[in-house]
Image 1 (cartoon, rainbow, N blue to C red):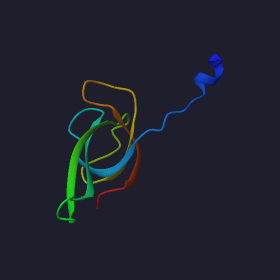
Image 2: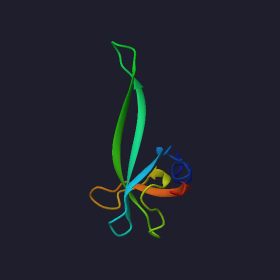
Image 3: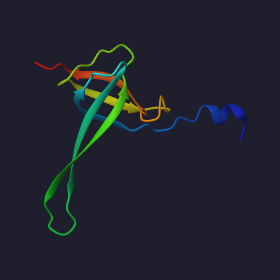
Image 4: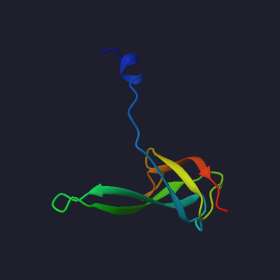
Length: 91
């Protein structure tokens, strides 16, 4: 393959929508993402959640905001997500 063809290949990046639970760090927010998965044996939906540290360059998001984060290259030891959009502001 030519070098030009390799460079134009775009990888699919994961993105999640969640709620900001902490904005106390500089340029970093903690986003809680909840998903519902079907239990294999009991066939009931279970709510699972995880906390992601995301890079917020402009310190734009605050606690309670609904935001969209996207996977990116590692910014620090724990941050591999970045804020792409504030979907809804907290009331």
